[in-house]
Image (tube, rainbow, N blue to C red; front, side, top):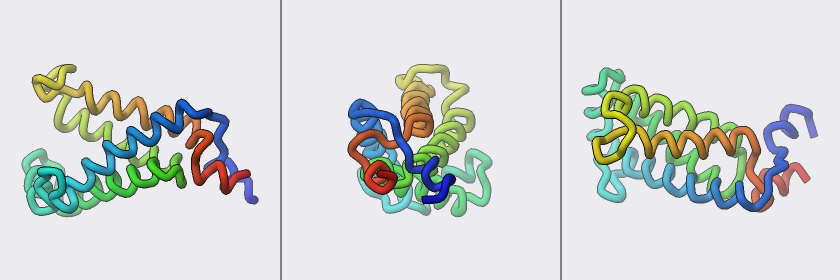
Length: 144
């Protein structure tokens, strides 16, 4: 196996990171489904695009598709443990954009639409990015 592929798939993490990866993946996949499909009370692509435009993230439709797609497919990748480092990198970026474009001016706490939840997801994404998928993952099975 090539060195680059092995670096992407290799994990030294245990079961704890597997649990973290799955729970963070579920949350991201659900948020992406809200943005893309209007699932779980979300606004769908059109509503999310309009919101993105109101934040100055233009073109709104493209930004909504990128954010929703990264959250949904990145979340699915975390859940099954396949290509988790590239997925976690994308989810890290999405979390940073959410924090600095939506939540930072509201302070830390969620009660004021602050950044605490996005910060927790950012921490989970960075942990997966650093440590890899964990013991129970497709990445570990492929890397051997």
